[in-house]
Amino acid sequence: MNFLHLEESGSGVEIFIPKTPEIFWSALVIIIIAFCFYKYILPKLNTTLDERTNKIEGQIETATQANQDAQKAKSQYETQLGQANDDAKDVKIKAQKEADRIIDEAKAQAGENTNRTILAAQKTIDANKTAAFVSLKKDIGNIATQFATQIIKDKVSATPEQLKSIDSFLDNLEKNNQRQE
Image (cartoon, rainbow, N blue to C red; front, side, top):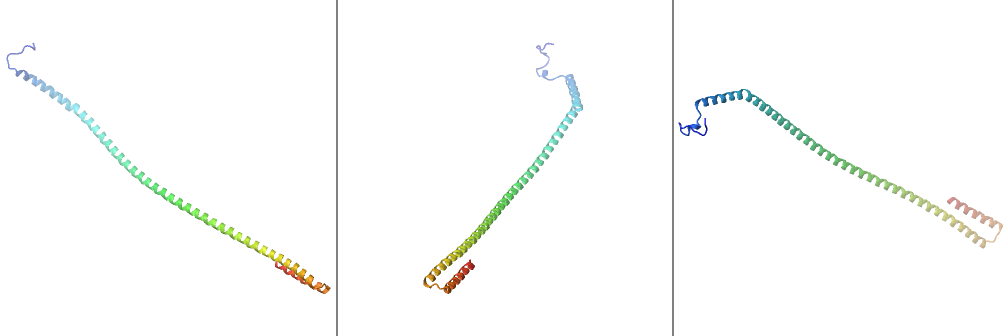
């Protein structure tokens, strides 16, 4: 058959419409292909799609659970972080109070040491003052005794009884001076 040569028996539209046996065989092939597709391919395709759907849903559930777990962990972390910050503030406050207490104790101890040192110095000063006063009294007593002795010797004539009396008086003065020391 020559494709260039057109049949002249029909109009030009008939060439586009297939003949009845072609329609029958085409329909039979389509039915067989559809049956095979429906019987063999479609169930496998549905099984594959169902497996994929189940796998995706499982992954979505796993991701949702992981997200919830992450949110819980984040919440716990934030709670622990807040608690740690509060604990750090408490430790800082306690350390400051302890430092203040130690400083106050040191100041009190220094004050007590200063007071003890001042009292000891005052006692030493008082003892030195008393010793100086006693020494001065002794020296004044000795000078007075010597001066009185000189005056008495100059004024009184030296009789043995008078000298004995003067010596006795001077001895008594010296004894009194020694008792006061």
